[in-house]
Length: 538
Image (cartoon, rainbow, N blue to C red):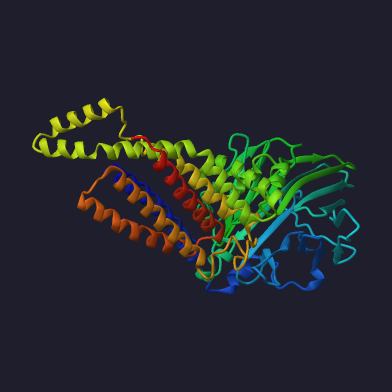
């Protein structure tokens, strides 16, 4: 039975995909604790610093702590995003504590006459800076002077409502000798994160963590922490590009200045505990009594695609839309456009589901027609199989001749399923990885479309709609063609009950937005089935 075969194949692909996603969740959640805090203390000189060594910065989107000694950003709270739905605690993206380190580092590599790297230290006039409501920008400057007459100033430029930060250096050479230096930027993160509650998976934004980069010839490449831990390090020269560390919904990224060619991007690790991805400019010579201005861009915040794309080419690809990102991106643009009109992400999901099903209507129609034609041949196929059961070659020839005579392609019912799979997967990634849906309410008890339905009402509704969709389709097909094969009928009756139960269990902990999509999709399928079978000419 071709309907049965196609259904089995599609179900197998779908269940395999969900099993793979569940396996990834388990593996990303099963992480190791550190057995010794001393290891972390030895890796970072920034832990448990005196408050006098910290510069606190507050804007409308950031609460940030910078280490005054080295100018590294060691804590960032995102003020417009909460740690959990209805929580009073802001989401902390960067942190530096005894269990976990996630920092942004930057500075100058300056060598003395003995080719030994000189450590830079900074000072500020005050330890607290705030972007006032009526100001558009905030500039934080940190200065330092070396014994050899080199003076340097580091600037952080913040903009109201923006997550990109300009990081600039002014270097003054008051020495009577040339100096060589380069500017670097790094992102450092502990490879193994502390254990978290697996049941809190949907609220935990660290579901996946890895580094990534973009270069002249590679738009977007992931670089796994395990490669960095095993010293399989990255080392590339680039003219344009960026480096980043990613997790679900959020990203940190350095975008080097385009004024320099042959910037180097690299990775390294510290004691196999901390992964670092960084860049540095080529060496620059500053003659005596000259000044040099250097700059770069930094992103610390959510995966806002339109802003990421403006900051650097291909930076918007850091949103994890899977292999079908080229479909997910336009689908998200459509979803975002609908939200601008409707102002509710849940109703926007309902509407985009209707639009997608309308656009794929020809495929669905073709599939149903093919299934109906194939079913109409079942009595003849059964006759041929019984007649030539001892001559397989003759049986195949007769079946092929029958298909040709009726002008039916046996794969025609399956091909529409294959074509629709990329659309399904792109919608899955789009709905589960878009920051805009994080903590977004729908109606009634659904107050977070990115989290699972805590009352499990939506998954149960999804299972019910799937049950009726299959039952309606099966009954229509069987009654339409007067097929009374008892074994086939019994198997389909079993599948009608089993498949919805299996999928309901899978969907219990899936994001509500995704489950909502499937409920609407199933309802549309039932309507289309009724329309197809009422108008089908046999």
